[in-house]
Length: 192
Image (cartoon, rainbow, N blue to C red; front, top):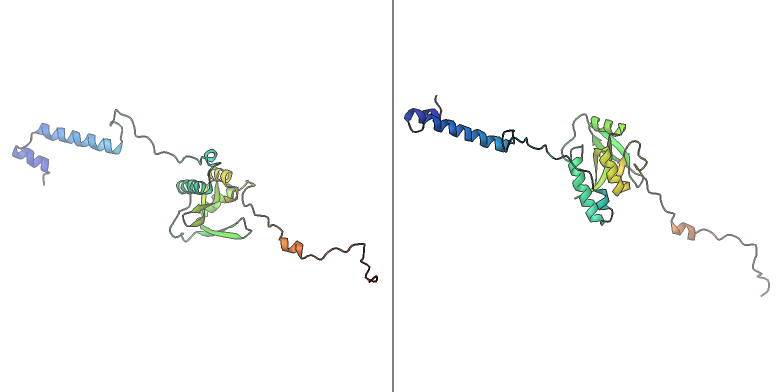
């Protein structure tokens, strides 16, 4: 079966030159859309922008809400683990310390657990829109998050800031209920 261009040319409605010109325009338009070389003066399309690092210096004087928002958007861009969905059958539980001394658990794919073990990835906490959440990010990005919020770096091999645990403060009631120390002077109760 003949295509429409051939049928129109056979009927004498368009010339062969009109068909070639239309095909050339169509090709040029497709190249402009796809960004291939040859369009716009032969410049190739620029590669997609790489994720920029966290602007640690600009976050130093900000309030908590601005820091939470910036870190959340940054983690969403650079995280290595999937943000949603079910884990595969080969996924394994990964345990880590929290600042309160409790143990947290994530279910991670084996390659992510290996990256955490060898130090090429870090496990960080961040404030998501639904509360505290955890994500696996490249190690250098985990270090930059730790510059802003040190307790958010949960696991990073070779970094002393990872896994910091809050020291419990002594309870003031325990000091107040302690028995008084005996003194050398005893009151004289016989002289009444």
